Length: 116
Image (cartoon, rainbow, N blue to C red):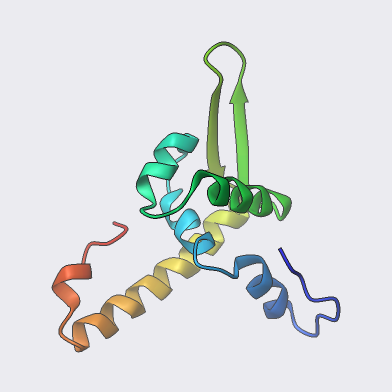
């Protein structure tokens, strides 16, 4: 993840952390904790390598936490932290605006329940 060196506004930092195609979708998908496999299945088109990379970056900024349980088979789950829940609330607003724009363009039916 590339973070600007000369940040002049907190929004620049948040933008740098959330930048990319997958991070908002990962956060959207983590309303409830999910295993890596369940998360990968819920995000169409993401590779496991990309998912793991983004999850690691989101963990670095306390947006996502990784929980592991001992035993075999290894059980791992990813959850949103309180900060991640706040970011998800912002993503909900962005999703709603996107749905409104799609509806205005006559495409609302196909995307009405995406992510719900």
